Amino acid sequence: MRIEPVFTKPKHRKGTALRVAVIGGLGLALFVILFFRLWSLQVVTADRYLAEANDNRTREITVRAPRGRILDREGNVLVDNRTSMALELDPLQIPSDAAERRKRFAAIGKVLDRDLRWVRNRYRDELKSNPPGSPITLIRDVDDDIVFYLQENQARYPEVQINRVFVRRYPQGIRAAHLLGSVGEVTAEDLEAERNQDLEPGDTLGKAGVEQTYDDTLRGESGQTRVQVDSLGQVKGELQSKNPVPGNSLKLTLDPDVQSAGEAALTSFGLPGAFVTMDIESGEILGLASNPTIDPSIFTRPLSQADADRLWDEDQGAPMFNRAIGGGYPVGSVYKPITAVAGLDAGAITPSTMIQDNGKIEISDQIFTNAGSQAHGPVDLRRALEVSSDVYFYLLGAEMNGTNKLQHWSREFGIGESTGIDLPGEASGLLPTPDWRNELFAEGETDRPWAIGDNVQLAIGQGDLQADPLQMAVAYAALGNGGMIVKPHMALQAEDSAGRILEEYEPEVSRTIDLDPGARQTILEGLHDAAQAPDGTSYGVFGGFPVPVAGKTGTAERPPNGDQSWYIVLAPYPDPRIVTAVTVEQGGFGSDTAAPIALQILSAYFDKQAKPVSGGSGNFE
Image (cartoon, helix red, strand yellow):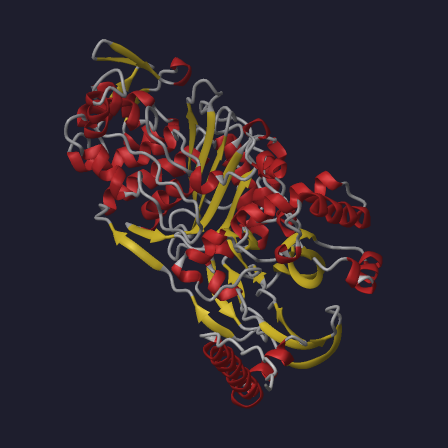
């Protein structure tokens, strides 16, 4: 018997072949995918990735354009540019980890000789207003040794950028600061405005004054430089560049002598106030200033919140406040010519109507008095303006109550509305009317409705009236030019960098009012007597001035403050070319404070000096 060897029969495992097939298929698929991906990278998109790789070795640097210069009408430079080295931080390079961020800020502060808190606060303040991702200007005018140190140690301070920037320079110091305005870096809010669509983060634009109004003229066009950098971000060479285009220059209507004299005169009294001098035919502003003023160079560096607060601190006179175009004041007796025009039109008086001025008058059980209760005896319109008889104009206000004539002519002369000057921040003031007060009373916002006393007070520029020097200058200009309400303006012409005229800004007339020539002549005669006749209220100031003028004093009550001083003058008389309006807060009588300031301005304009006068019996107001 043969014994056969026994072999173990392999067991057949179902599914093994399937697994092998699946794994093989997946491997093949992955191989195919990898193959096609490599083929895509190396063949199809090679050019694109090559370009991106090149971009990783290059940087585009924006080269800011210098803004155009600002000049006065004689070509004297009021604003130009200087270069400054600015230390900026790239927010994208600032660590998100708080501890690492403090470490970086401390290191930067050590270089700048500042503490950690200063760097952190500056960064946070700027970050709030800057567009997302835009460079944060930490400090300007960085010393050269710091610049060289940071450039040599760029790898240690990757978040720091040192850029050369243009900042504004003011060759004449604080001259014309309020009307020149300021520039600043664009904010996120600025970029949202439709007119700023061509701006980018880091750009600058006008923030106030003519810098803001004529930003499109003054702002240039930025250029770009493409540079090659190494792995540490250090510049190794320049590849190509597009030069920036400088902004155009702006020549203003300012007369340098008028502006200088007006500012010096305002400052000499040490009180808040303002003045405006304007050509009555063209509306060209020859001088405009507000006191206290500001140093515009403060805006050439990042402004702290404490600095901003000081600029608006009322205890320091709110230096940023432009009283010439925004001050809402009662104006006192300088309002009387407007009341006179209204009274003549209403038929309440004629130029020869005579009344007896006994120094006071009772209207609706209320006593109204002249300044100092002085009696002027018989007065007609011309005499009433010469001696500034309140009683005469009280009666006019009472006579016109309910007719709306005084409000109508006030509005015709531009009271209660903005003049349209090419400066931002102008106020419209307030012209009180029966409807206005009655509406407030109905809403419970005042204790009484309109009464006859309100019209009486308005007739002498008191009560709820609010106006500023520019509005009053425009009103007097209409009186001087025969009825044209001119639109005041600061810009004379735009010029390119070579001085070629690109655009001339033409005068504009807002409207023409129907001013009776006879009424105008009588009123101007009264104003001339008020300034240069022995009984005139400003004879002591203008009596010895060799140029004939027509001017009016005003002393406005402004509780709880002291009396507001006003003076408005047209010159030369009888065919005036210019008007000057001056006001001084708590300056007392118009003849004591505002009139001497106006005299200094006219002396500069006409290059004439007043001689001292003696005698004269005019009362002070």
